[in-house]
Image (tube, rainbow, N blue to C red; front, top):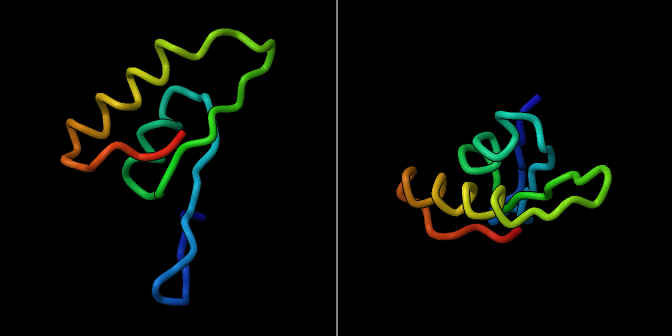
Length: 64
């Protein structure tokens, strides 16, 4: 089930996940991204990829 806020303006919807399509879903449907980081690895490359996805989609940079 994708986010379907009822109230307007709706509270921000943050999409979580590190699966290959998680960041893409966050850009398409959400207002931010929460990376799930098992093992506490460095997230720099994933965050840069997320920022690029935002730019490619024509959205301003979303919060992480």
